[in-house]
Length: 167
Image (cartoon, rainbow, N blue to C red; front, side, top):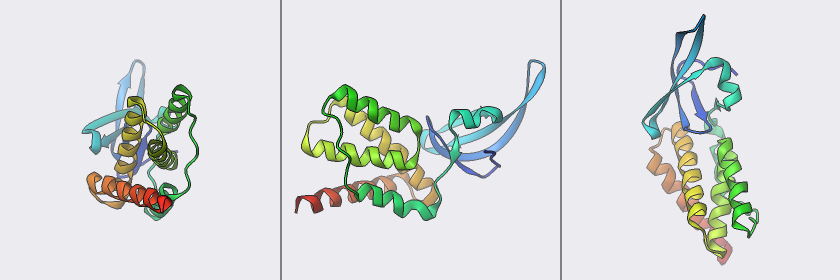
């Protein structure tokens, strides 16, 4: 997939941002093109060779029309996570590493529900926070909201889902 200046993209490791430029740099005997991606939530600029963007997993950001599907995933019935913390954390970590918005929504949903029925370890809590931060940042990027507002929305959806299940 190729990107243009102004495209909203998601780097699986650093999160969502904008392509702000395409630079050409001399590298040994050849010239290489690099995407310049600003990641506002991280206050970071990433330069990534155009030829490796697909291999790294950089993708277009979620379409705004798909935000209701993300919220629906958060409200949906959670998947039961393994009780074994090593197995659970490995499973969750793999989902977070993909950087895919629906996988992040599942991580937030499933770990939130797991925390309702059992103890979250520090690593579980860190994975939940990281997944929620990435999810909120992408939701904010595509909706034009502040990340803090997207975080509040995620928390309110999860609080309502837990409360509805308890009643």
